[in-house]
Length: 468
Figure 1 (tube, rainbow, N blue to C red):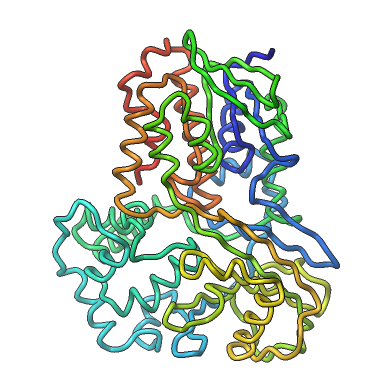
Figure 2 (figure 1 turned 90 degrees about the vertical axis):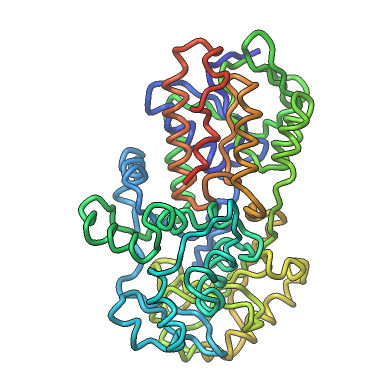
């Protein structure tokens, strides 16, 4: 039997970020992971000179806390920023259309019609919503108009989040935009204040990976000397007795801890919680996930007519393409392919077309290459193929998700020392997982010296971090 003050169940990016944050404050942590390796879906594969990512391909960061984490973890020298001056595209009427990144270029862009541009200018005069809950489609249509939703926002929601804007909760999925409306009454006015008046306080965005891929982040976070790692360690049962959490794993291994952090997918978390709190288990277990296939294809550069002068493109649902987005990994990062080759990564399925994840490898490759042929002038077959399939890729923040998160927090008030830190709350990106993990570590550190009874009816429960 082992004892530790803090135990983390789940060795993905959420659990490791929390463990690392605690270890940085001098608090020993034990991490249990049922798989033989750490990192969850973050996994870098190297084959035939190609470097592919099983899930997250890069880290888009604007948080200074994450910058400090990267530096403290010793990863600064290994950072690899994406190529400079790369364009961003969406598919419009069967062709790649550049997304203007500056307001001065927006007026000349063909991405939106004249009517859509006029509607965008009128956003500042739109009244606030009086509804307690809106979907992304309702929020964007009301503030920016239907065309901007269909041509720009829906491709982002489907391509980046694997979600459906008709069902996704606006406050949870677009917290920065909804907060601008709440605080300033307008997205446009809020952006003006934040970019002009408060410019000095805003951290600049940066997109980067690491020299050896995203898995370097996992190795760095898990190598802290105060973190004890246990892989192939599946939890069988958890109990709460005498102000301590008692866990049994692998039908024998036992552990007692004052703080228990569960950082597993929602359905696994629900199964662990069911014996002690069926209501909390139901709240977590009802969270839906989208399946996704990540299709990596390698080609000789001569097979592609397009200049590939960008990071890739997203697709709108009305375009009826076989995938939701395509990243030009060899344009983003220079060391992802052998010399003279290109690597294109496509995302198939998601909430838009979950059935496509059950297509065979040949079906997925054939459909993707056919669409790429029309869009970027692709000729011939790929010389490299690697497909990663995720039955539960990303959580879907559907319905009144803020209400669900509040109910989860309320139930957790009954369980001192229990914390849920996972991507079904607080954001799915690597940036937000690191940020939320470190925030959770700070809260636990502040309360660890206090009697556990102070956790009851506390507003500092870790799940409260899900708020924007």
